[in-house]
Image 1 (spheres, rainbow, N blue to C red):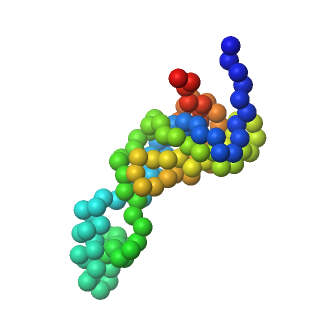
Image 2: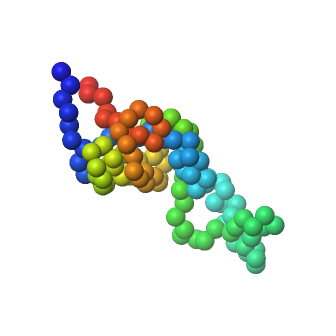
Length: 120
């Protein structure tokens, strides 16, 4: 017999990344070697290359580093806001030093959906 459990703030659920989520996460992440390269370029006066990309790295700046993600990957999410039955916002804990804020997420099984973890 399946028991209905109401979603509440603080619950841990599973979040499946959508393709747009994965693109946002991967775009903001960098690597240790890329940071080292940009720190060594801190002597560049302009601080930008010809494409408009920053060539320097401010010492002490926060870096988002972690393994690459893809659509369909599943991560734990802590619910931070319940909008209506089944719709939530939450912090998705990624495999790295950063999180992803997922908003207006509906309960389900497709990308940009949350689901209860399986009982074991």
